[in-house]
Amino acid sequence: MNVFGTTRTTVKQRHALIAEDGHVPSSFPGWGNATGFVMISPAMGANLSQILIRFEADGGVARYPADDCEHVLYVEKGDCTATWDDGVVHLEAGGFLFMPAGHSLHLQGSEGTRITVFTKFFEEIEGVDLPPVVHGKASDIPAEPFLGNDKARLQVLLPTDARFDLAMNIFTYQPGATLPFVETHIMEHGLLMLSGQGVYRLEEAYYPVKAGDVIWMAPYCPQWFVAMGDEPASYLYYKDVNRLP
Ligand code: UGY
Ligand code: MN
Image (cartoon, rainbow, N blue to C red; front, side, top):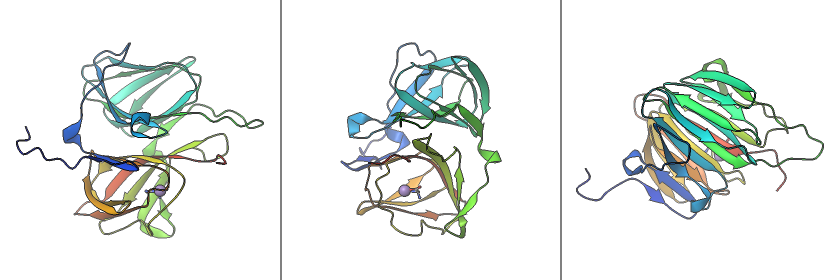
């Protein structure tokens, strides 16, 4: 219980920080023993949605219908089985899955499993192949030094060619490491702090952040990060890519 009515959560027009103390569950048709926490959505002005799914009991079910949206998900904790029209895969913690538009997706998780799902409308390009289903384990993806800094390493989970109009990456910083400059770009981000802590600059404000926090950065939101504390800080993030504005 919060007797003083305080929170680190803040929702602005061009960015938001959502801390875990403010989470409120939503229920959705066809879901059972699975709770959805809608962290980011068009209701706040975003072009994506980011939902945290928590499975409340073994065999909990979450579903996404087949429509014009594509999904990319990451298993933060626990394990789940993802089933679509003509495929199935079992994912452990650190597992990820990209599901192209036009497919329904059925997720069944064990009790306590936490999954983050990013969803956006797919932007098809004439003459470019449709993207395939992709799945894997983050631990199999090399962590490359970011712009030459081996204390700030980036894992790019999905292929980067023109079939894909989104990216999902993991950034890991040693304590004291930073984004090398204040980025300002057309791409939008949805972000989940996976571990550690630090300070995020969003537009003109500086926010202390830690594992479990979610951040939305609208296009052109100036952004910067420094990792602080004793452990490395890492975050999972979504980005729209590969399409002419
Ligand atoms: O890919 C990116 O734009 C990334 N460097 N941004 C971020 O970490 N805020
Ligand atoms: Mn960025």
